[in-house]
Length: 464
Image (cartoon, rainbow, N blue to C red):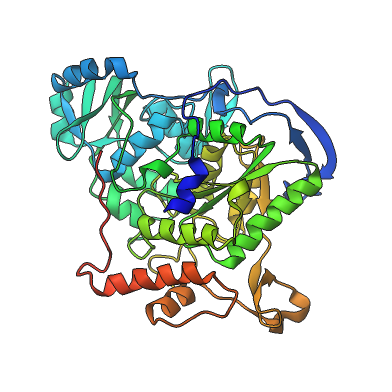
């Protein structure tokens, strides 16, 4: 993956002090508007002279210094232990690098309740930061009894290696039904994350402050793309970015996506920015079984850059380590908030972000427009500029992806994800101009590999 690797040559990885954000009003209205039976409220775009500050004013980083790691490993081995699932480990990764700043570990009960009921946290100074998803660690009755009387516990991986220490612990009841109902808006069976991580979970949650013994690595050939928020901020500073716009995705990139990203950069240049940089940020944690796995998506993204669909000079490709909930308007707030901590001050949002089909009924689980509306009103996201998608479709007259023009609707074809997957599985080519040839070839190869897989999905190694 040399083309993508070249994006990060000589990238500084040490934490640098980040300049406070100084903004001046620019006389163009931002698309951050909403209506609640009143006239739309608009916010002026603010041209930035520095990277946006992390939530809470300081990026939380929880990996202990290298000089202390042997000591912490010895301490961990003498403590009661909790074995982490794959998803638990992904959340340790998220917390350790500061994606969830200002959280310093798995949520205590007060933080859990604020997240469930308010989608935000109130800090000690009275300020509000967005936090829409619970980041919690469950335990069962036997684990709770073993921990009894301890103030710290060790978190270990599937091979019994110590990963982290959880200090000043608090144990409280895990009301799974309420958690599911408030996060997804339904308790219908078949929600992927629920079935994977919650249905069989313990009846207790344990919160506390994390000390992560060493950086989380997966040894899958992709660790060089898992840039932390501090590493991303250093990269944006190195590139002299005066705006960072983030694009969250869990699917292959087609030319409609590319049109949205390149058009966003054009709009930012028109607003007065000199060097807006795209953070192309595929989700790298848990995804449902029918999504294209991360390793194949990264191969496809490589081809998009190699074929010049996106410009490597103003694109940073990195992996976002969070698991995927498919929780629609609730989850899209988490996706946006985490990118603030990585330095993004613009966030592109489209149709039905983080959504999926209803697990029981033949309909979408969420209203397709609610995600972008919620982002425009969400507490704690006021500093983030929301850029709603225009609708892109295949223009038969121009033989390429274009923004949909309702005045000539008959000229456009909407190629759904389901249709795209069907074409790739059957080795049929999409219309010319839908996806770059190299990217399409990777997608076809992936579905070919599925035919040879007994499980129907190519496994990916997950280790520390």
